[in-house]
Image 1 (cartoon, helix red, strand yellow):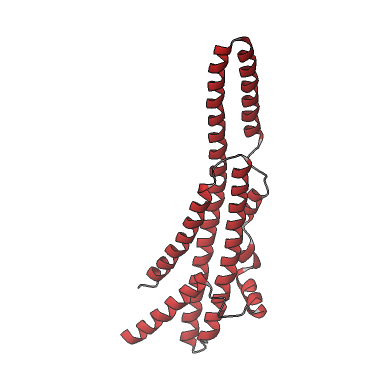
Image 2: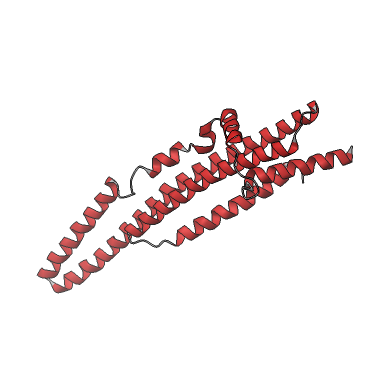
Length: 221
């Protein structure tokens, strides 16, 4: 009994790993398997991330709120020029005030960009984890049912969920890096630092490693 459980555990672990990491370099995508997966889970399961796509198409963060801030800054700069023309000493104070306003506007725009994309990344992560869990549960259920009925074909089952994992991961990657590139473009457009882009990439890679560990834990090892 212990030996059987050990073998079963190893198989489940292997399945869990391939579901997430998708070793596509070992298996060529099979159109028939892809169609089978789309029929089972729905094509949108692998490709649809509506909220992220909608956010990506909504334009830059320079919306009405940001434009208003910039208009206020322009007005402040104009007032500074007038004051400086009237009184050089007052002009110095006005220039200092303008610099403070510039910093405040830049900070607010940066916060808006960070907040906007944080919502997108959080949503994408939640959807990806939910769908990954669905794939994992389906793989385990099919394994158990096939094993009980004596119809289990391990290689076919593994190949199926390798392809499922690859399909999901590829589309999640596409959404993530697409949003990240847009975030970087907005930061550059507003002359803001882009250090956060590298941080986000690292966090994404770490999240994948963390999920691998969680899958191992769910399998009981």
